[in-house]
Length: 397
Image (tube, rainbow, N blue to C red; front, side, top):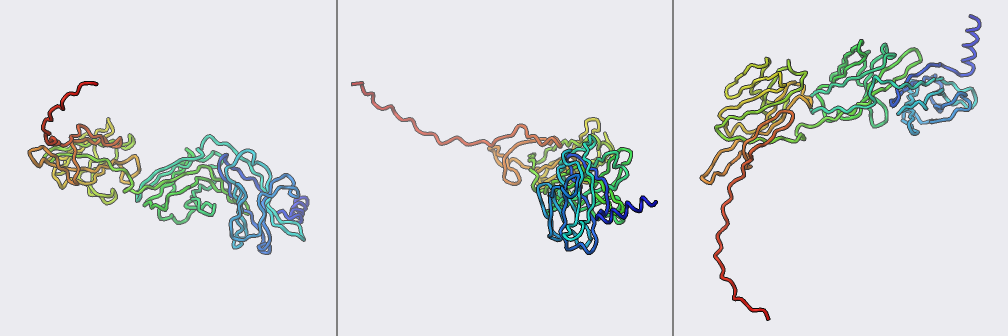
C-alpha cells in the first residue's frame, strides 16, 4: 500500500495525469481525448511521439483555442469549455504504433500530460471503405462490422464535417432516439445496422462506423469503416421511355431482388415515388391481382412481376414506378415514362402524347426498358425532277 501511494505521488509530481492504451484499425482513424485542469486552459497544448517525453517529436503544438489545428494526418482541437483537447490521427498504419504524449506546456513547471500507447491492428472482419447510394426521401441502411475485441464497446456512427471532426449521429448509449437515425445490434454476428430515413440532399457525405471506449479520464473513439453516402434526386434519375398504341394492351415486366420474394409488389403512377398513386399491388405470388384495367402477377421463381394495362388511353401516359420495397432503395425499383399514341392519318403516321414518334416497347424491370421494332414515320418522296438531255459530245483534240 505504501509503495502504491509513493508511485501515485511521483506521478503527480512529474505531471502524469493518466496512462492508457488505444487500439486503432489499419486504414482507419482514432480520436483521443486528453483532459487537463481548469488552470491550464490558457496554456499551449501538444501531442508528440517518442519513448521519452522530453525528447519526443511534436506532430502538433498550439496555443489556439476552440479551433482545429492540422499537421499532415494529425489534428488537434482544444475545447476550453470541456477542459480537454482532442487528437485525431487518420489513415493509420503499423508505423504509427508507439508511445504518444498529450501534454500541456508549462515553461516554469513540469508539464502535465497523458501517456497513450497506440496499437494498430489489421482486422479482416471489416472493410476499410464502402459506397452506398440512396434516393431523396427514401432510406439508407448501412451495415457496420466490428472486431471481436470491441464486442463490449459502445457502437458509434458519425459524419465528417468541414472542420475535420466526425459529428456523432447515433450510438447505442443514446437515451433518446435521434429523429431520423436508428441503430440495431447483432451481437453474435458482431455487426450493427444503422438506418437513416427521410433522406435529404444534405445527407450526402462521408460517414464512419466505429466504436467508443470510455472510462474515467480515458476516452477514445476508433473509426473502422469509411462510408461514402450519395443521395440522388429522383428527378436526376435517367428515365426509360416506353411507347404503346391506343386501344392495345401494354405488358411490363419488373425485376426485384431475390430477398424480396415475400415483399409486397406494387405498380404506381406519379412524378415522385413517395407520392405516386397505386394502380395495382399484390402480396401473394403466382396469383393475378386485378384493379380495373390494371393487373399484376408475381412470379417468385423468376423474381419478377408482370403488369398488364388493357385498352390503353392517351391519359395513361406519364411516369410509373414498380417496386418491391416502400423504402425506395436503388435495387428495389424501376422507373418508366410511358407514352400512348394513335394513328392519325392515311399516311400511317404515329402520334405520341408529348410529340414524339415511335413504336412498341417492353419493360424489363431493374435491367432497364428495351425498345423493340421501333417504327419510323413514312417520309414522302421528294418532287420528281424532269430528265435533262445529254450535252453534245465533243471530240478530243
